[in-house]
Amino acid sequence: MAPDYQQLAYRNIWLGLGYLLLLITLTISLLPVAQQVQPLMIGDKLLHALCFMLLMLWFSGIVQPSRYLQLGLRLLAFGAAIELLQYATGYRSMEFADLAADAVGVITGGVLAKLGLRHWCATLERQINGS
Image (cartoon, rainbow, N blue to C red; front, side):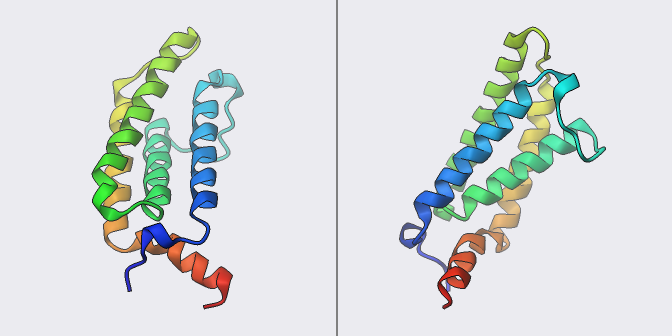
């Protein structure tokens, strides 16, 4: 059964947590490189792709599938804004390759959502509500 995305009991909480994820992503992206926390020793581009894949998956559980293209474009605009802000800091650099990695993440997240991972939110709500 496909969830009705407008009927999520905790939709506002999921959205709020999603916006918090965006804020955390922005904050970490604007820290000087020496202060960044990198608990996993993985490449920068892979980190970009994973981050944007997770953001796409998160929001895909909240919005209707018909809005995935708009969601993906908004996430890419967010990634572009981060790159511009990094350039404006003077201590970070703007890299087109970072935005390309963000796009790979958004596309991967969109494919995974279409394959069924978009139901994470409704599934979690059913478990929370015991139904």
